[in-house]
Each structure stands twice: as structure tokens, then as C-alpha cells.
Image 1: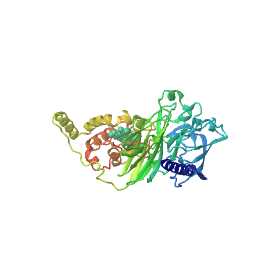
Image 2 (image 1 turned 90 degrees about the vertical axis):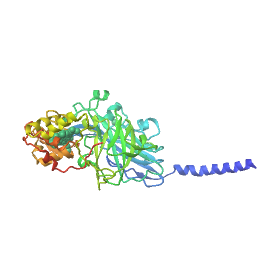
Image 3 (image 1 turned 90 degrees about the horizontal axis):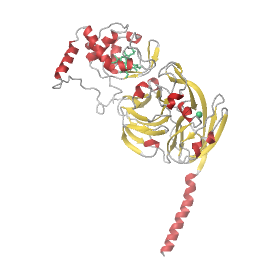
Image 4 (image 1 turned 60 degrees about the vertical axis):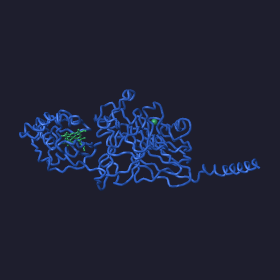
Length: 473
Ligand SMILES: [Cu+2]
């Protein structure tokens, strides 16, 4: 009796399995993959079935800007660094064709971390200039995967920009969001120092020593600032597909002014919630999601922070919309603070500042403020750093209305500006100085290095509207 029952149950299950298993893997029809350049991402996949997907990717070696006035020979997948974004569905059959442009000097190949098979397809895709290789694979595991060139010397091919991301969407897709962007970090090694103008060749020694000249998102400094900033509106949800091509550094990926509501750790299926900074290894990825609640600039950085301010790992997300004072008030008070004990020294300083009635006194105090707050970027001699921080010495920018210049120091500045004929497209943070300090430091700046010798009063500073402070933690 019991045996018979088991036998019947068993045969029902077996026949059900035979029915279901082929259906799961079944491939219906075929289509061309939509490929996009960073920071764009192909649209979500809406079909419910698996299909045969054709991916055609072209390797192009070409000269492009790595920074303002600095050219570099990149080796690219699809003409951009990082390479074209590829989006398929778990269970899809992918026929991959790698084409190496006839003008290339090198053979190249591709190792896709999404491939289950030897070398991720590397030897199957080894391609000489003017040739095409074809191989196919099944997207077995959902996740966000790095692909890269794996032709010797591998480090050099990756260092020249040969990497990108392929997303294998899970069976049931990803939750709907309002915006998706593609952001990939990489470290670069040039003969000349950071910002050194003109053509800069690859420096193998620096690469071996793991001492990058540039650490950037999407292949160049300022790839996502000014007009190229990513965009979002208050109330929207944003998903960043984050990758790190390396070749050497790991990224402490962080967005200043946001908390990641969700992180798909290492680009896999596990989700961490409420994350401030997520580690993205070289040759690894993460998917981060957050809702934007207040307007302003969110700053994408590698929180190994010298890389951000001195090597280029900085991007912006411009959020437009209504402010929400409940979520973030902006500065609501600027009071005198005189604790007991600290009083003697402080009272003295305060008196000095408010007492700085003479321009000479303002100049002297302003020099201190400059040394402590400005010199790190604009340099002690005011000459700045070419390609990164504009000069204040004999700056033609300073000839504009004083109101505008006060606004720069009070509220910060971003976007493209021209100073003495050089274009700068960086971010100057609002430093939270008092009106007196701003008056003094500008009196010092105007009074130095061949500038116009204007004297700025605290009341002038007070009359300039202060905007929501951006870029702070
Ligand atoms: Cu290559």
C-alpha cells in the first residue's frame, strides 16, 4: 500500500521534472543586444522568455582626453572607457563577436566574468587587428560582471582602459527605478605628473609600483561634472551600476550627501541596506540604489580621498526639485561660541577679527585664513595647479564684480570656468567660513600677487545670499 503510494508520487514528480526542465532553458527567437556608452545603461529587459542574444563589440585604439589638455592613447571596447554596457537575462544564450579594428596595433581578446568556461572566453576570442572572433556562452548566473581584455601584458591592456560591465538580469528582473547610470572607476599611469599638458604615454614603472597618476570615473577627469553631471529629481530612485576596472586599486565607493538604501554586494544577489561606503575590488562591481530626497549636488567619490581631490575620482549628480527642510535644513544659525577656559584665547581672536578695522589688519588675518583654508588647493603662492586648481595670482577671473567672487568663497563653485585662458572644470567646496573671515581672506587675495588691491568688508559679504551648502559630509 505505502510502496504503491510512493511509486505513484515518485513517477508524478519525475514526469513533471521532464516537462519543466526543458522549458526553463528553452531559447525562443533571437535579438541584437543594445549597447550603450557610459554613463548610459541599456533599457531593462521586459521579455519573460530566454532568447539568443547577438553581441557585437569592436576594439578601437584611439587618442582621447584623460584630463583637460592631456591626451592619452586608450585601448577601448566600443570606443569608450569603460567599454559598452551589455545587458542580458539569466538563461540567455549569447553569441559574442569580438572585432578588432584594422587600425589596431595589438591583438586583443575578452574575458567576461559572466562566462562559465575557460578564461571567461579569453582564448576563444583572441583576435588580430582586422579580424573577428565568435564564441557563445550561456548566462548561467545573475549579477553585474566586469569584462576586460586578457591579452599579454594583461596589466597594460587593462591600464589602457580595456574593461566594462555586463549585467545578467535575474529571471524576474530588477525592481523598477527611475534612473539607471553606468559608473566605472579606473587607475591610469602616465609619464607626466597629474595635469601635465600635452600627450602623455603609458608609464609601465608607475603601473608596476601601483602609483597611479590619475584615478577617474568613466575614463577621464570631469567625465561627470558640469554639463555632463548625472541628473535626478527629488523623489526619484537612482540605481548606479558601479564597476572597478583597476588594474590596481580597490575603490571605497561613496556618494557624498546620500546613504545607499540598498547595495547588491559585489554585484551579486545579496543585498545590504543602509550603507555609507561600499568596497569595489579591482575586477569587481556593486549595484547601489538610493532615493533622492533633497535638491543639490551629490558628489561621487572614491573615499580614499586624496584620489578625489588630487587624482580626479570625482563626479556629480545634480538633483533638482523642492527642498525639504525637514530632511535637511541648510545652515540655520551662525552663533558666537565661547566656551569657558577657551575664552581668553578665543575672545582675543574674536576681538582681533571684529577689531580688524584697518585693511592692513584684515590682510594679516586673511593671510592666516588663506594658509589654513585655501593654500592646499590654490597653493601658498596663489598660482594654483594647472588642470586642477585655478590660479588666484593675477587671476582675470577676479576682475568680475566683487559680489560674484564673494559668492564663490561663500557658496563654493562648480562647472566650467576660464581663468587666464585656461579652462577649469572642478569643484570648489563651500568652506563654511564666517563673513569676517571671507572679508579678510579676499582682502588678502586681492591685495596679493598683482591683483586689484580691493578691500572687502564683512558687510559686503553679509549682503551676498548664502545658498544651500553642497559637498559636505
Ligand atoms: Cu587588449
